[in-house]
Length: 482
Image (cartoon, rainbow, N blue to C red; front, side, top):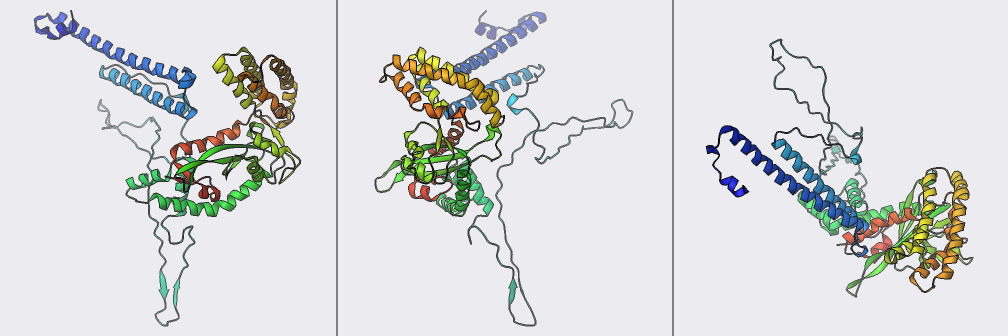
């Protein structure tokens, strides 16, 4: 019998037993149809996930796009799960206990304020008439509640006092010093704008829109004034931080592009932000991590030379040739520095060839580099001396074998081929790639500083361009113009 025919069937003509069985059959068919729809949705989500992870190189997403895709997929899966639970409840089936997400394991921080809501039964009288029941225990559950940012007005009152018997004058407490004299914001409000802009990558025009939803109309230009005042007062702090970092014995450095307004030409040009950072956590160093960003209109090595004036330690970086002048006896601002190059960049060169051509030589190079990283995973977190001993015993022979293999392959492959160019890159940086074998404080790659460059990429996406004059004067980074 077709579904349409079943709908048109007059159940009243059926015996009671047959009627009940037929109604149960209809309910089951409806439930099966709903489950089939849910399964189709889940299959679609799995297909999307496979595309994100295993799609063609030309279709693969960037790191940020991939994270957004995962968020959307997780949201959709949660929606389907809730649909299934709701349907089960409608069918009077026991709601299955969902296992807690592994990413949210553990209790909420103890320092958060707790607001208890006690839910008492409607009646405490015993159903059998014995009298009032006594408390024998309780169940406690905790949920995270979020209160949107609260805006408030700080009213400062300075009473004036005068003597009724004389006219010697009026007494009044002096006004407290403010960051912006006679201005609207408190220091907390300015700090909030700065954190939103530089830590959460929220442009000023969006902050202006958020405030407007609360009835506070503050133009983005006003917010920019607040940021400029804060930048001026924070400059000594940033300068001191840079001096402190450059007193270290080992630092990372990297640079990335920043679109800046080119006045008079009606378009933007490319500037550069340079990140100088210290991160000794992998070997238990005593100095805390820190980072300072510098702006320069170009990528020339003279900019790195100027920024690093006073630094004479080991500098870990990628293979950009602009840094070569730092290793020369003619270096300005200090003695020649020692560089440590990045094995992640070397690996990336081979990975590019392997992804495009499936080269067996590139695959072998990747396998050998993976052995270096396996040792690093074992020694992460131990002190520098132990790291150095482990590297000399375990990694040094592997690196030496890689060097021999590298020279053999360079003889077999044309230097002008794509693979030959990548092998030549590794050969040209071979000295710096071995620095980590000679000092336990040095990392195998410069990923620490590359992770600190990513927030600038987020700012690039969220902003139209930067003002070059603001970049030069703003110690916090670059002032975005929206």
